[in-house]
Image (spheres, rainbow, N blue to C red):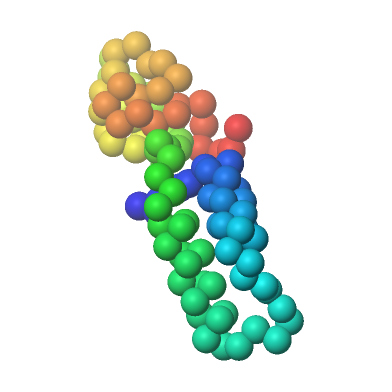
Length: 102
């Protein structure tokens, strides 16, 4: 699964990097050498790697399947049987309001 990071944390980190660059009088000129570009890219990667991952989960969508002569409905994602279908599957957490974007 991919790591997700908060935009506000990334912006805060980049502002800190720019502030640190200004304090150390590092001039960013159009005639950057390739070595300077690599160093800058590595510093940015290091700063962004330190930003903590956000607490997110994948949004899974499904629907309840009612079968003939069955008392329970079945989750389309995990086949969990539920006597009283709700807006989510208590087994896998799928959003049962349909398989399209809400």
